[in-house]
Image (cartoon, rainbow, N blue to C red; front, side):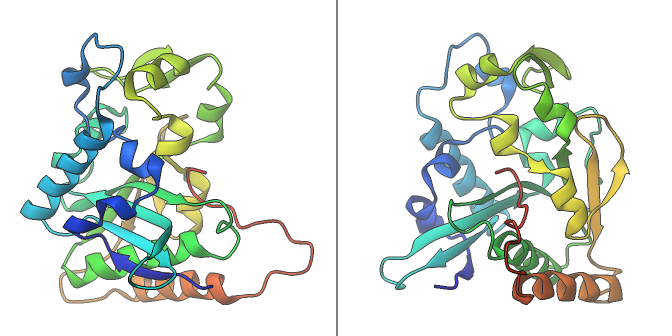
Length: 249
């Protein structure tokens, strides 16, 4: 069954997959974590953050849902917001996010939906929504394969106030519950594939950008990018081909 993509609403929190409800990698200010072993209620923290952003700025997520409208099942999601309300964003070595950009923080697809082009469809919906709202650019911090290779040891990870620190990946998970670089950040190669370009290189966490608006309407580049995204969804995969590579999966 094909998925339909809808904006995240205030009453849609329970529709999110478990990890998306509990992941607070981007939303919790590291300074508020301090020396605590873990957050007592990450779902509360995430819902409070989403409610704050949606009330002040508008919808900050897109959901891919299947099934009847009365009981939909979420197959994928994306979150995005002004960088000023994303505490983690300022700690990256390639920060700050450009003043004219919205930050794409997370993109996830549930098991069984990775190979049907759903990540591309979700990004296309994000772009369409932001262009409609007059946003000039979309940026994201990508994670490289080098960052993932270090996940079993000391990982450069922006988890503490004061800049980028080196902590063990397992320690990061202990503090922020289910949050990990692999699950909560988007793969840099996927971002490039859907039209982002690197504007601030880094071995582990480059910052990428997609231009959306020139001030007088849609750019030809955006129209072309959307066409490529939609074509990638509908082009049949050859027999024996592997799954489409998604984001932080």
